[in-house]
Picture 1 (cartoon, rainbow, N blue to C red):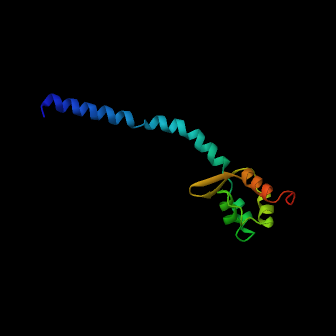
Picture 2 (cartoon, rainbow, N blue to C red; picture 1 turned 90 degrees about the vertical axis):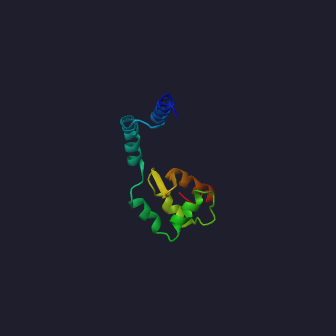
Picture 3 (cartoon, helix red, strand yellow; picture 1 turned 30 degrees about the vertical axis):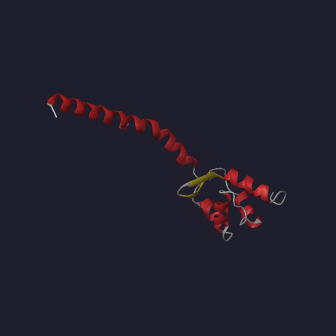
Length: 114
């Protein structure tokens, strides 16, 4: 390659790289408030203990979040009803609000859970 072509190729590569790399300073200022919001919205660890009182309840709730309510029992749904309103982490790729889980239980057992 000629030197002019080398310089143009270098500049094109440099500009392309800079266009697709986000600024670190901008990322930190943009994401800190939302991360703090999400951390305060997560369910405390004690909520997981509530579901462990009924055998298989946590797994039943996890499956119910994927529209498989076969394993939900009335006892499990009574425990779910006591959960606070927060973001419940079910697995590494799935989180749902506890109000959604409560609504699933109320649809499965209408009138039984109060």
